[in-house]
Length: 107
Image 1 (tube, one colour):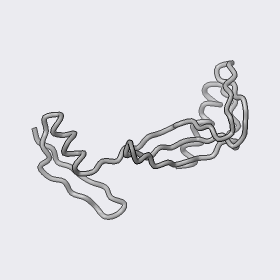
Image 2: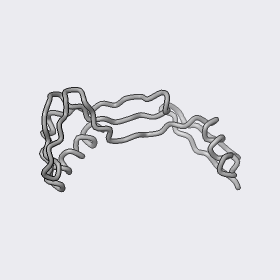
Image 3: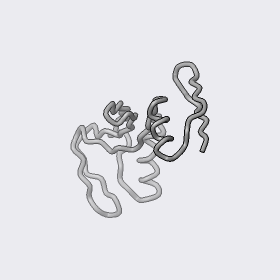
């Protein structure tokens, strides 16, 4: 995941002419309990200014670029979302840790 996350900076440099020093960003995975999601961030390890499309963008040490969110759902939240969309959950199977679920929805 860290390599995938940092690759965003590599691609921005190559495809957008950005000036990211890839080694000056650390990968951070953060659990956001309030939103029930994992968040991926790239954190500046030093103060720097990066050129993006010819414009300077300043980063302070510790500032992050939020690159990805991965939502996590409980059986209850799946049932609630399905119900709000007019569906019912007719089956909900959970696998072994790390938990992955399969929900069968019916209209």
